[in-house]
Structures are given as structure tokens and as C-alpha cells.
Length: 329
Image (cartoon, rainbow, N blue to C red):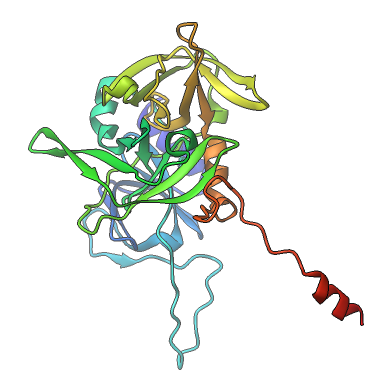
């Protein structure tokens, strides 16, 4: 199926016709997305950015520029209720944490994908070792493995910025732990350096759409060899280990790859690499991206607590016995 046919099919599924190319979505977090506007829904906009298709919520869009025309304010979401004319409504809209695709985009070659998404893959360093990670948005939010930062209080992130055709390594040391889930081996971090630029980020795909035998590839820092690309196939989708289901892949995974992205050939993240069987070759494993989305969507439940760093949950205080007794009286 050609890209044009794919776009038309997607628009048909969403009940809208394709719109002209060279459209720009100006986001409320000051970032912008440019591509082909495929469809508009009351609560979301579908944009083809060349190598993937994004579904962007209305509440994250400040304005829409269609084919170079004057920017138009984004239509309100269906749940938005306009304020009366004699009042002023103030709405605090948080930045979009991550972007995901509705359907898998057409496949491309690994070489061109790595050039396009390579800046979004980072190296996570701690006094105890190193791992990999990847950006979810331009604001500096990134995913890595819990075991990469477990028990650590000093974390730095090395980012490779593209400048004048060269890759320039920059180290950021103001890194905050936002949420952790040690049971699924996931951690959400954020770079908070004051002079940090907007970061290149990666789109999350759909691991449920994968088939056994599909080509996949990983980008990470095995044994500290940063920006290493390895390729293989999906060996199985449901390998059970220690009570959890993992994606098994023949893609080479080594220490240092932990927390890095596993991609499909559309350049979408389908898993987070986290382990391998040491006495074999081509036996790598990744956390399915659906678990990553669940972790991000419910990150408040996994909020990092400085007083108990190993606890992935926040519990409410139980009622005291004295209070219970007084209530009965």
C-alpha cells in the first residue's frame, strides 16, 4: 500500500477526508509539528509527519496553520465549555507527555530512520554504571529502566545534538526522577537544566500490531559504546519471565542497552530493552510499549517519593485508632 493510499484509508476510518500538505500544529508547550493534516476530530488531530502518524489531543494545540496560511486557533475539544462573556476562564494545560500512533506507518530502511530519530536516544549515567533512554517530548521527559537508576541519587544524561552535520555531545546533570515502577522495570526522568533546548523525541508505537518474525532494531549504548545500532527480528511476543510478559528478539542486547528503545521499521518504539540471557546469543528481551503507556498514563500512582526511593506506590495514611474511636462515640 502506498503512503497516499495509507493516508486515505486512515482518513476514511476516522470519518474525514485528507487535507493538503505542509500543515503545522503549534503546540502549547512551544514546540511545533509539521506534516500533512490527515483528519480532524472533536478531541484530536491526526498528522502525518513523514515517517509516522501522530494523534495529537486538541488541548495540546495552540493553533493550526494549513498549507502555509495564517495560523488559526485550534478548535476546542468536545468537553470544553465556553465561559460566559462577563467572566475570564483560566485553564492550566500540562504539556503533552508522549505521542503515540493510531496505526503503524509504512516501513522504511534502518539507515534513514537512525539519522532521523538518533538524537532522541540518550545515555543515562550514574556513579554505579550506565544505561540508555529516549525522549518522550521536547520538554526533556525520558524513559529508562528502573534498574539503571535504582538506589542512585546522582544521575546525568548525555544527549547528542545535531549541529552543522556533526553530533555534539552535551551532558545534563539536573535530572529529576518523576516516577518509578520497579515491578515492570521502568523509570520516568526529566532534564531540568535551565539552558536546555527543546529535545528531539520519539513516537510510541503499538506492540499489539507486531507479528512474530517482524524486523526490529535497537539503538543504545552497549558496554558504553554510545549510539550503537543492532537489528534482528521479533522472536516471540509473549515470553513469560518472572511473572511478566516480554517481547523476545534476536536483536543483540547487552549491558548498557538497558532502558533504550526497540523500534519497528516505521521508527516507532515498540518496546524498552531491559535484559538478555547471558549464556546465549540473540536472546534479548524488551518491555512491551503498551506497559510503558500504562505506566505513563498512571504515573501519579508511581510518583517517586524521596523519603522512600524504592517504593513505586504512594499510599494514603490509614486512619488513626483515636479518630476511629471518636467517630464511634
